[in-house]
Length: 308
Image (cartoon, rainbow, N blue to C red; front, side, top):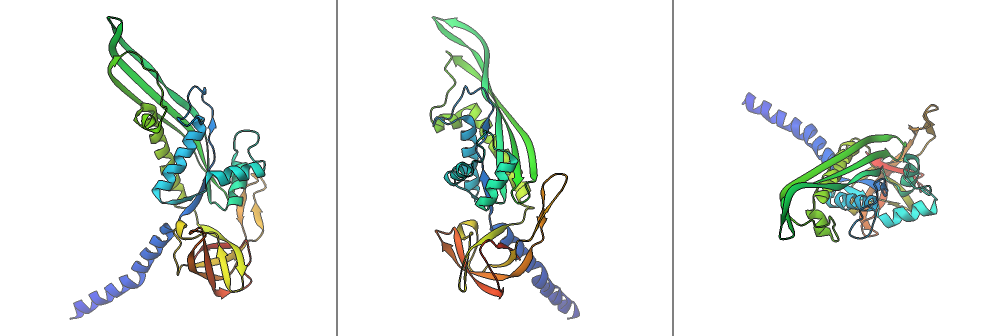
């Protein structure tokens, strides 16, 4: 009986401490980080374009946006909103998007991570041996494709570069060749089936893995966008994984701590002013939520909302 009693106590301890911790961890992972993908600079020889007429840089950044949305892990800022802001703020007018301009735009859009990049290689080479039979060239053909991209992940709040990687992918194939068809892809299916398309997809997958790794350690936060009496509106809702009943801690932003050597923000001395609970997570088609006050006072537009 004593052994059974001890097992019962142990089980109760597990339910009391370990299970809530696990559930909290799942809730933390459930809420999506906000990401902005800026148009990649095209540093290639410009021989190739996307089937839609876009540059290689535009095409690859758009592909990354599509794949990030498909993962369901992130709230990705719409390209139209990003381009409009960049134009209005005269950011990136000199051409390439810098970490500084990306961080500034990201803050205005309320994202945690900005992705910037430059396509350095994009193309193919062809080689082979053979001869001609009745004016038809027949032989063994080898095609190779290379895709290279420099990518940076930026912490929008501090301007710090979280990761900087050069991703390079090569694909090749051999086979019997008849003639010399021009390398091209004038629709998505042809691109996906081509070796350069497969190399591109592998490069995109590596960028997502890099983002997954860095995003996991970054804190999530939203902002209060409106206070109307007892109702508090925040800029995160169902489409970011926020659920009715979620309780968040609200902070007012303090003075930025700027490193005198690097000029980077080291954070700020923020003040906790209370807690709020989500009661309607479907405002604006799930892009915002209405909350009520759990404790505290003095809530205002622009206050930070963070996980407890």
